[in-house]
Image (cartoon, rainbow, N blue to C red):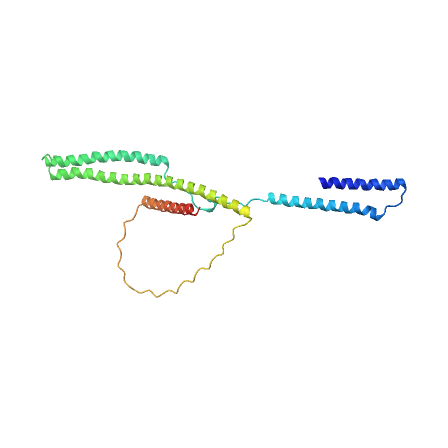
Length: 249
């Protein structure tokens, strides 16, 4: 503002001198009279242009968009899947309670059958026939209880998995935002990864024809057991990764 005011004053002074010379009749202006004012005008113009350029550069730096930092959900394939609803889990718990009561009743019935045989009220064949009916129902109850317990356990593991994934995503996003802010302040970008060439596979050796003893086949696991083991493995991986991140932070 001060430079602009000086420029205006110099310009007005120049016009005033010109008018004065014309009025008094001193003749035509000499170059030496005009030169100081021309130099002042040029200096002011250069200063104004410099200030304008500096302001434009400052605005371009301040309006530069921040580096976009993707969230954890867009990078990592961690997503909890629900296969058992809370309603199904609650229903299984209720059925488990009823099955447990029925099992106690059957156990009491089997014990009473053997007591009646000991008292001589029934013979061996009658004892075995009556006890077999109770034992068959006991086996059915045991299978049902195993299935219901697996459903309840699966629901609890899936809930735990969701909580861990949510905790991990929140922690990951927090760290990611800090990284993005530091990168923006430093004005650097992540370097692209250079793929490393895979080592050549060693030449295959001729296999010896040796007879191997056939191992006994393991009992086949149920689908519920396989699913539970898979979820446990995923939970362990998430916990291990969280521990590493806490150590690095």
